[in-house]
Image (cartoon, rainbow, N blue to C red):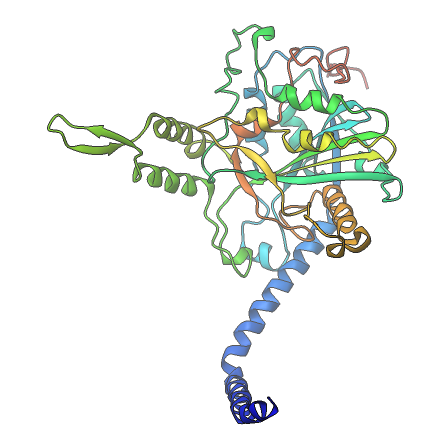
Length: 419
């Protein structure tokens, strides 16, 4: 055996020398390939730095939406709100993006249960407060927007006291295939009686209202205006806008008809199926002509350890199931990000890795971070119509007892009061 090993030594030495020669060759030409790599790394680090500085310098505000006793408007009113908030300004020039680190405003539309009390919030950059209030009151004059303290920071989360579970969501099908919207649910027809409406958002409110003492459920829908991004947004960027992606998806569907037809001469061919035609019609209605958003959705269940109910986990992960429908897109959990699967004890000694992820997702939620570091993830895209389906003021058909409503309409002071 030793004789065989000794016989192989010259061959191993030759292989080692080849590796050394290759390293010397690369080192010799490093003045050619080194600077581009260093520039690429510097560009990436620089953008992270200036954007983190810009984001940290901004002030943010959390407004709670107080619902009126009666919401007679359809989700089309909330779609108009989203259309008015879809702002692409603030990063128009490459100097703004590359030197000042400016990023366009993003919002967090939140549905929250604090021990069963259901609340609706909107979080955003404070300088846009007048814009948000003006757009919101234009379409919901009887509601109220009230500045409140951040509920997520008030909760003294600790691994010793609380147990938690959270996750992000994504789309099941290609970007551009729409989810079933409120128009498909006939919620845009104001002639329909309130008690006859089927609004899938009621499922979300019922889940939130089912929380008990010591239990909390947080849901945030992070959204920013969608726009085309090139290399000046980052070292590796060539991001098409939503409208372009929709047109490409429509072309792909048209080029792959699914239904077989038989011609009178006995020959066969392919044509678009009813489902494909329905999907193209929905994509043309929402994707080509609507207002478009980059979106990320996150949900967390937190409870004191003595009242933690594990059955709420599957309910949380299927929170958007009523919005799913065959032939449309679906909102499904992105399970690999925050829920590592450990089958054996040695994969996660003493739960260190799992506890780290629990803390990180709560930190990501509190920061409302998705589009930029420290928690930057791949977003998906929705239209204002789809966003309004997921987040709108519910009508009186929502019977959740803990969904609080104000007892009177908002009234402005007369403009002619004496000074």
